[in-house]
Image (cartoon, rainbow, N blue to C red; front, side, top):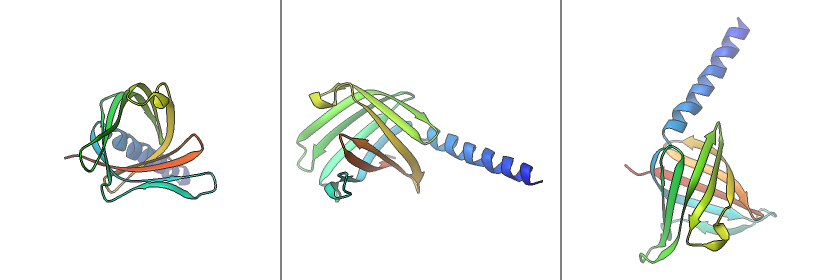
Length: 135
């Protein structure tokens, strides 16, 4: 009987992740981001819409654009992504920022209360971003 319950729990967890993955396609807006160095010190933070960013995802491609609150363009990029379980990886193949070209970002992602949260490292900085789907 314990094996049956354990099997059901595994199936429910797998279905829960699958359902969340299906929700990834669409347009997302950045709600919050925090960036920490290897010592855990905050080296950057985006809140209160001081910086705005939108990311649009299809089945396996993404595009993002970032601008400041005055409407001034900051950066844009595009590429491909994969989602396997809680592993979200995106590779940039077009960008306005040369340092991003060809980079692959490997994030651990979760979905909580309609927010897509992903965390990962870039050049020694821990990135944590919170995105909300545009309705």
